[in-house]
Length: 223
Image (tube, rainbow, N blue to C red; front, side, top):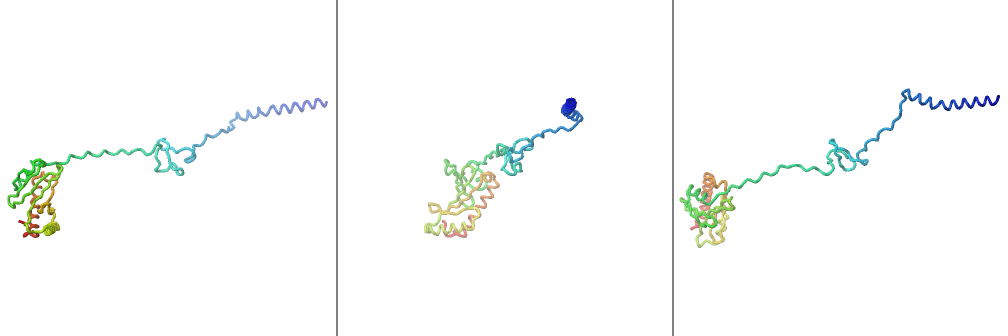
C-alpha cells in the first residue's frame, strides 16, 4: 500500500515538472512581448567621435562645444576663390616728336637740345622764356625754365629769393642750380601733356605764376 502511494506521488511530481516548459511555450505563442536589446546610441560630441556636419563630413572642433558654429571640416579651412587682379593697363606715353608739335601749337618755338635723351628747348614767343622739356620714364613730362642772376648777387641772396617764391608757388618749384642760375620746374602727367588743351592750360598757369613771382621777389636780381 505504501509503495503504491509513493509511486503516485512521484508520478504527480514528474508530471508537474514536465508541464512547466509546455505552459511557458503556450503563453509565448499568445503574443507576449519579447524584450530586445536596444541599438547602441551614437557617440556624443566630445566623447570620442567627431560631430558630423549637415553634409555628412566630420567636423573638428576644440573639445567642449564641438559641433558649434565656426568649426571647419576635417582638413582645415577651404581656400576662398578670389578674383584674379585685373592686369594693369598700359600707361599712356608721349613721344618727343608729339611734344614738339604740341608746344609749337601753344606758342613756343622748338628745337632739339639733346637728341640722345630726347630733350627739347622750347622758347616762348612772347615772354622769351626758355623751357627745357624732357620725358621721364615715358609717363612724366618735366619742364624746367632757367633764369640768370646778376653777377653781383651773392649765393645766399639767390637762395633766399628762390625760397620766397616757393612760399607762394602752386605750379612751379624754385631752386638755384649748381651753376648759380635760377631754375623753375614743374611736371605734367603724360596723359595730360598729350592733350593740347590740357597742355595749353598748364603751361599758361606756369608762365603766369612764374612772371608774377619773379616780379615780386627778383625784379632787381635777374638779368
